[in-house]
Image 1 (cartoon, rainbow, N blue to C red):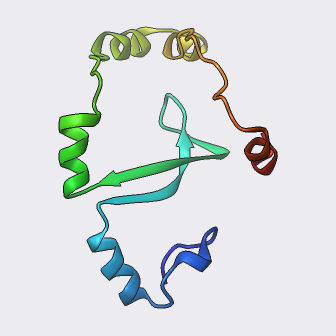
Image 2 (cartoon, rainbow, N blue to C red):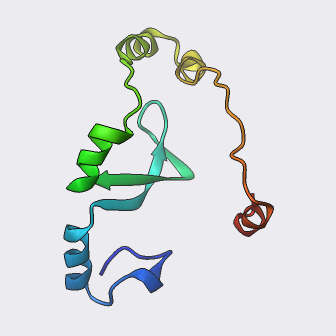
Length: 111
């Protein structure tokens, strides 16, 4: 059966229909466990993994990528650092702001 615990009403009733829909979909999403900087599973935290195929790959490569950054130096710095300092090194300060959200939507999401 398809892995549809949260959106069961959107899933086809049988595995064959689910596989057919999967192969035709240009974008696939699934929940995965979040991982820490040492690839350890972070219990209770989930991430959405997004897979692209077909036209979505072309659009991603040609239109959606806005930049790329070489993280080799950061990776080497992490590998050589004290384990207690790695989280601070791996998560530099960013200018992050809450996403502006309609109050009705925010209430529905519990944000």
